[in-house]
Amino acid sequence: MHLLSRCSGRLCWVLLLLFAITADTSTAQDVNARRVFLDCQFCDDDFVRREVTFVDWVRDRADADVHVLVTSQRTASGGRAYQLAFLTAEPGRSDTLRTTVEPNSTDYRRRAVFVEALKLGLVPHVLGTPQMHQLRIEQVATEREEANVPDKDPWDSWVFEIEGGVSVDREQQQKELDIDADFSARRITEAWRIRSFFWGNYERESFEDNAKSLDSDAHSGGAWMMAVKSLGPHWSAGVATSIRADTYDNIQRRFQMEPAVEYSYWDYAEAERRELLFIYRTGPRYTTYIDTTIFNKIAEPHWRQELEVRLNSTQPWGSADFDVEASHFLPDIKRYRLEMRGQLSLRLFRGFSLNLNASFERVNDQVNLVRGNVSTEDLLLRRRELETDYRADVRIGLGYTFGSLYNNVVNTRL
Image 1: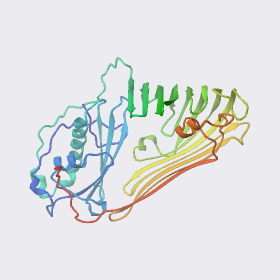
Image 2: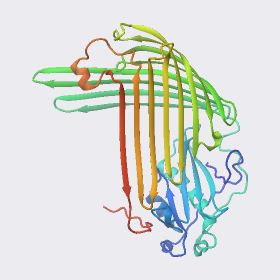
Image 3: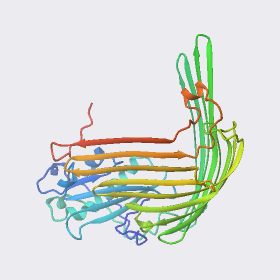
Image 4: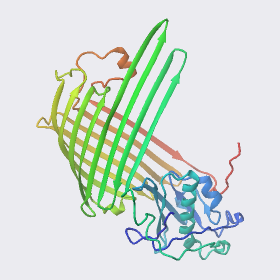
């Protein structure tokens, strides 16, 4: 059972409303109806317009009386938590609702839960309009529900997931086999966030031509575990350990341990809409290689430290995600890596949007490269990491939408 609340933080779960609001579809494009802009990257727009017909849906936020900004996060149990911010230019009319969906819910269930919260949040904005007389509350539950978690949890907040698959791709002269499996376990509470992940992957590509055949194999696998302790609304600390093997990186086995500390500029409770994080990690790692490296090593230890700055923001004007990581070995600070990634989506003016995705890496720590020349097969199939000083990727996109203001009609015919 999901829960809805108008509050933020822990002052939640005051009322559990199980209701359905209905309206005559003839109200669409009524001059007196509230105009609403749905700002959601993952919502089923057709389903929303079919179910919520007591408002007029517009295609640009500049034309809206109500701007519904939707964000989503994964819950500790593996479900989804939606936050719906109903933003208006009228003082005191903006509001926020939250609702959760159970893990393993069907798409139909997720859509229904989301639309129920959307309807509830729009009710105050419809009051005073002719559409308010076409709404009907079918059921209201007045008993308080504390949470959708039982009093006695036999699993003690632990959640486990197992996934795996086999992929086969075959042509007359080529075939590919891909096998992967992974297992995860996590326990997330207000005080602790404990996660572990185990994975394995095997790939084989085969080519045949004029009675000649070529087989190329690659595999990777390992385990990663991390425990983080909450230290208040702005601080947390933890430690991560990992072990992995990867033929692409020339790693037979690598063990690593990294204690870490994190500072959040804004309260963690605001993470759904904005977060600015400063993360510092440091620790030892020991690596054994499959083949001798360009530094004539078959095994070696390193001590590594890293500083990361991460900014995420979802606002009415769009969204921004930036991440900067700088790391190096100790005491050899000449072996370093600088990584920068960013995604920006801006609504510049009516109907016009700008999307920018970019990443850049300055690489000077490839101590794992294989000595000697890379074989033609490994080069063409990208089975080995190649030496490079940098990696860069940029994409710029522009979009412009114009035409009819309203978009209430749903038509899914061929």
